[in-house]
Length: 111
Length: 117
Image (cartoon, rainbow over all chains, first blue to last red; front, side, top):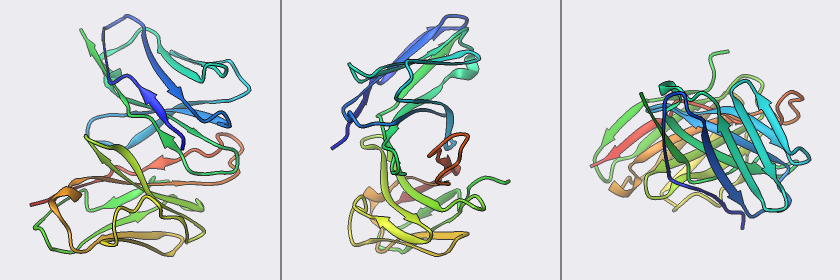
């Protein structure tokens, strides 16, 4: 079955860039997503990328997709303490509503 | 729109009791999902519905778990009898097929934190 892997923890200083990585196994993934979960809250969609794209930029967020290596990354520029949260990558096939989530990466931003 | 609404936000119950979690999806969304989140197992999809019909319940852990969607604006997840290992945060999410702007996006509710003593 599909599998999505992430590193569990990342710690950065305020103002630095953060890079959160994700690998997946399903070669037919059509859309890949990044969700953010703040403490005590549900998941919130941050951004997504279609599988025929290599990169997508959205303000401080940059998503890179290496389809050959099945590797997805999320770069947060000028990381702020408010960015501290758990970040989940997820993938899905065309026509299917079922998302497969990664294990989540806990990002801690220190002042 | 108010977003996905879940109730209660917190539930504490004793082992053996029946627990009912409720969800109101975003109006117009035709897919509804129930997830469970624990430290050990992460985020697990339990079941999802399309147009009120259960499509995939392969993630439902045991017969003690059941979910219904009697209409487009309401769903329940029931655990009977509850056990301490059911303690988790349960999320409901909804989505709309064919949304041109962001396809397949799921919108999550705030979750119900269940504690079974």
